Length: 210
Image 1 (cartoon, rainbow, N blue to C red):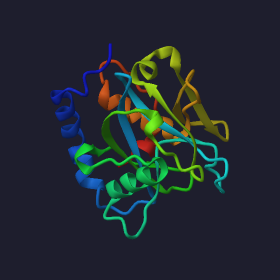
Image 2 (cartoon, rainbow, N blue to C red; image 1 turned 90 degrees about the vertical axis):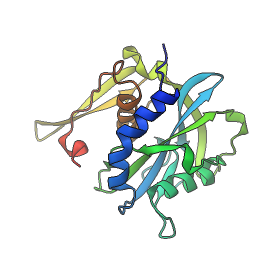
Image 3 (tube, rainbow, N blue to C red; image 1 turned 120 degrees about the vertical axis):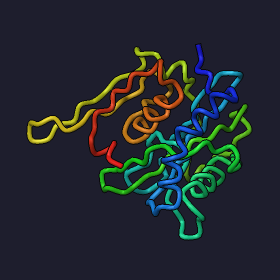
Image 4 (cartoon, rainbow, N blue to C red; image 1 turned 60 degrees about the vertical axis):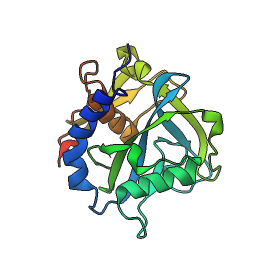
């Protein structure tokens, strides 16, 4: 059974829960922003992901990610960054009215802040997208029903000097493994959209720090 988050009541609940985080972080400086696109593909409620191009330089080439990228000085705020980057990467125009709000920001290994922006993009035909080959190798979706099945959920414990530091979620058995910050943002999204059906596996004081 799919979460009823696309109903008017479900959308209103999510927007209300995100209102405080949105007000707090929308205008704050950040290194990057990503869009978390909630979509309907053939009537199935899903999240959209990209596989970053192998042509990219740096450590993110070939990574699974949400569409997004670095904040530009000309961007009005992090929401504008996420929408602009999504348009540039996928040819997908998302309006501010479709944005539900900002999820808890996360931090990469270099302590750079990445702000996730949740938006409902409605029915989506993947064939209509125009991925920029310089930035994206592949676009795919994972149904929420798939992400919520415990057999598709895993976790990785990270230790340093023999001591436990934190646990990060991993989502399995899709076209690509969802891990790293993308898995953390997926975890936050599922907690919001399906609080009764999803049991978070994230244990990290650093990531939960406001």
